[in-house]
Every structure is written in C-alpha cells, then in structure tokens.
Length: 95
Image 1 (cartoon, rainbow, N blue to C red):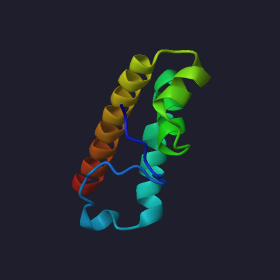
Image 2: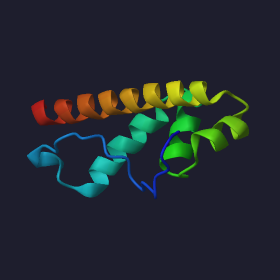
Image 3: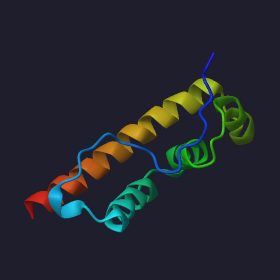
C-alpha cells in the first residue's frame, strides 16, 4: 500500500534558503531545534521515520499504535517542523 523509501538523511522541507542562511550548520541547527520542540509522541515518529527509515508498519508495531496513528502523527510532525523552520528563517531574514 505504501511505498518504501531508500533513505532520507536530512528531511527536505521545500523551503527556500535566504541569502544570509547559506551556512549548512546553521540550517541544520534550526532543523534540530524544530524537531526537539515537537511533543514526544510526534518527535519519536518523525525521527524514526525520517532518520531511521522505519516503515509505517514497523513504527506501529514498535510504538504499539495503529498505522493510521503513525501516519497522522507523522503528518502533524512534518507540518510543525516545516512551520517552525519557516518562522525561524523568516525571523532571521527580517532581523
């Protein structure tokens, strides 16, 4: 039903990088901060999926939740991380 991915070492959020944020280490720092701000339930699904390349089925089994819950939490986590990174980058661009 769901297609497996090869691997995703760094999640792509599809955000343009402002000129003053060209340093990869700074961008990575912003991303890590956004992930760390996630509630634990969202963070564990996000990290295991994005960095562990764990399938939905494996995540559900490991965490003792339904696959639909995995998908829901992952969707909310991705949106929260994207919004957090976008706000941080916009704040740096303006400030």
